[in-house]
Image (cartoon, rainbow, N blue to C red; front, side, top):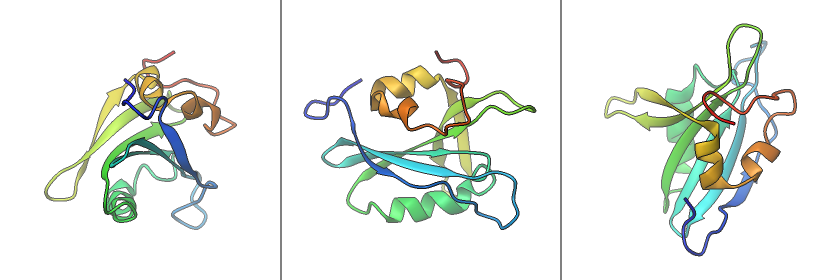
Length: 130
């Protein structure tokens, strides 16, 4: 669903992958799209962030203090688990809930840059998508 004036959403950030823990197998990749004048969508990709979402979300939310921030997670496919996309919501106690969504549902909101800027070693389109 495109927002009037933002067709498609405009990608405003694409960080290099980083690791939250030294020696940890897996990296994280942060990308951000402007979806409306007062709204951004943050997509965190990679196994390196899935255990630190409670820490990472407040930090990223703080970087966009004047915006409503929507969070999404992408778990790339590997030998042990299939890929999936999820919408993230934070509870009052800081816990993060993942709600699986189809990758193509998110791609319809954010545009082709979602898949074009995905991690090069991930050839999946996500859980339930494609």
